[in-house]
Structures are given as C-alpha cells and as structure tokens.
Figure 1 (cartoon, rainbow, N blue to C red):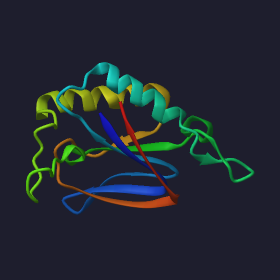
Figure 2: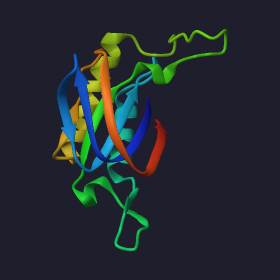
Figure 3: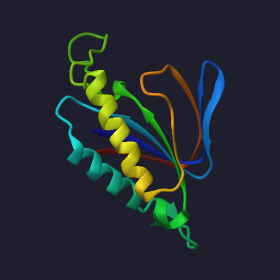
Length: 145
C-alpha cells in the first residue's frame, strides 16, 4: 500500500460538484493498493499514520501526532499512485490491485483508522472526485507498507 499524506488546515471532497465530506485540522490520506497488499499492510499504515509526529507543538516543532491534536482524517482511494510510466507516456496500472481486492483493503483501512481516530471521513471508492485542501506547512509525506 502506498499513501500520500498531507497535513491540512481544512479539506473537502466533492462528487458530482456536490460536497460529499469535509474535515478541519488533520490529514488527507490518498491511498493506493497494489496487487500484493494484504491486511498486514493496512494495519501497519493505519498505526503509523495515526502516530506520525507531524503536527507542531508550542515551540513550532513537529512533535505531535494526529491522536495528540484530536485531528480528523479525509481518506481518498487513489489507484493512480501505482501508475507505471516506464513504457511510453501513457501510464499503465498493472500493479494496482483489482477493484474488488482494493475496495476490501480500503474498507479495512477505514475501519482500522476509525479504531484510533474518532473523525474519519472518506470519498467514494472508484468515484471521480474533486479534492480541495489547504496544506498546512506545507507538509506532505509519502508512506509505503
């Protein structure tokens, strides 16, 4: 599994030009699932993401986690994180998990996050979504299992 994590002031996801979900301070997590991923990958990333110390303390040092600040999560499925550009200019997604397997791990990941974070919001798996976010810092982290 691969994630792109952005620390945000606010973020929202729109589907068909309508607000679907919105969060305040916290993380936007873009999640890609590859063919070889399993439950252990989801567990590892959920634990790691919630404990990442990427929020500022009173001395403006990145010392606080999502749990410490009681932040929110906006989770967005994004198979394009496994784009392969090695041959030509049009990407292939051969390494991305098939929709059923990816959706199962996506839903497991949601549940694992919800065990640790009280406010987890999502987009819709497989939907065409517009994401609006105000990156705080900016802070963007790439994590893989």
